[in-house]
Length: 364
Length: 58
Image 1 (cartoon, one colour):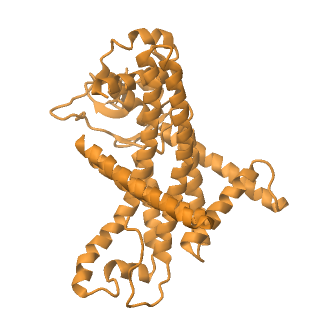
Image 2 (cartoon, chains in turn brown, blue; image 1 turned 45 degrees about the horizontal axis):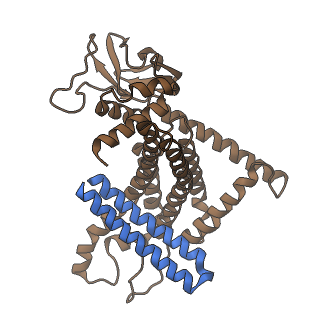
Image 3 (tube, each protein chain N blue to C red; image 1 turned 90 degrees about the vertical axis):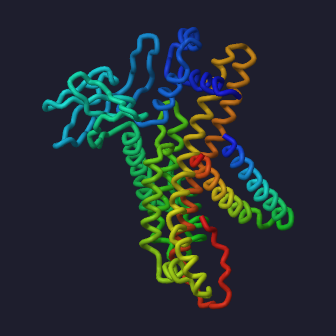
């Protein structure tokens, strides 16, 4: 498929998701400059935002949603509502300083509100430290509260009866599955210490993945900063729980000739970092790719605009959405499983076997 | 663009090998299906991680 086609498809996806009034948008979809339109659209959906937009009226140019609080640090803490930006149309003046919202990022500007590019591709304006409660943060807080309520109810259930009632019955098999098939199997006898982490990370990723399939445009697990945070926690836990054997196998592996030890040491040290790096990239890329595929397929309907393509691509979208449902579970499972595997490698007790050391541990 | 194609070819070959071997193993020992599937998913995920990392490098 040619580049222009892909851009058209993506642009059409924009109109499906962003506008309510589809009939009115169809007439204009061919005329807008596709390159900039697509870039803005991809930015809009895949990036974080200071608004929680439910839907937009493309004709009137109005957005319906909740503005979220903006918290910035610029020689002092400043808190105000994102509605002051009027979706990037207006400057915000605070203590003689001017802030502008530009492509979902806050920049410092002069009183005229000019964004400078200089020679680079990105704006050269200074950015204040942004601690805002953005859309992704809202979604994460929501999921955290939801998980707290769910598992609090589950725990309460066990105080009264041995078999839980209601929704807790759905959670119990999942918890048991993670305990028996992931934690016990991969970590070994000391699995209990790590159960809280594994359960939290599993349900956190799972619920956020599932929320990503709703039409609210939540794309938290498809944000590399979030997956970086999750992978960083796994990395820290693995390094902290590593026993003597684990460090010995990284820096001075037994049963290998000394010149080989020197060659292998940097590789093993690199391996420490590639494992969480792969965790980060895997989750991020899978979720982001899923979002893009679903939007593109929806967009094809509006590219072809005829009776055959409509139902066909509707069917395709449905099919991919179902696959995405599977991927949502699979990625949560994989992240948890690999975290458990890495922890298991760190806490494993080796027996002394100086001659045979060809263990089949995966490198990444 | 060519690099992306090469990555996909490589990942395809790898996935095919994992899937083929898993099928062979299941055919030989149907009672071990569960364990084989888990191992297969792990290796598919590892492969996918490398493939995605390479795709991002491209």
